[in-house]
Image (cartoon, rainbow, N blue to C red; front, side):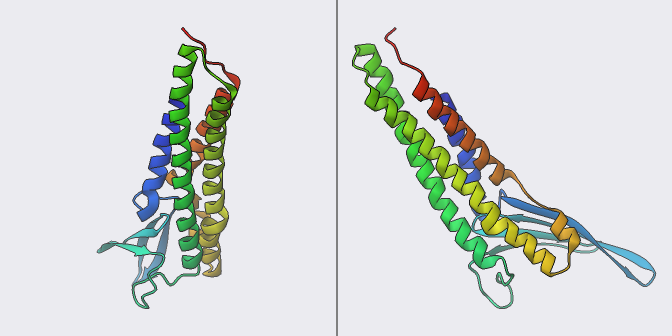
Length: 205
């Protein structure tokens, strides 16, 4: 049960990355330009969430932050980059998978409590063990789908975008980050919880 609770906590953190407050991918690089004998450095930092991405652009005299939804196709301020459609579809799918994972872990938690109580009364059976372990493993599969879908469905498309722009700094400094890591760790905890429930036997104390 502890493994499931920890996995759900990490999963909630991954879920909060929907609006870019916690990124699933991050890019951080500098652009240096020479003008009038001086070198002007512009710092660019971006967090890519499941539904939106945030960019902070900082130059010597100005700093601005934009939050853009992948499904915002406004010609001026919307998401017009090549990765927008892919990240929108991928992010929406991941939110569904995260929801399924939470439901599976809640079912597993309830089944564990019932199984423990049944053990106290001497009526514990194989059916509840299979439900418990199966729900945990199913949650692990859903989390696996989340982080693997992000890599192929959005993260790689962001890198392709920078490559098409001949922006090697952006390409080389775009990496998976917190949300992605939380989904991966949640998968491990859910999988371990499933194997643990499959192997142990609750006994009356």
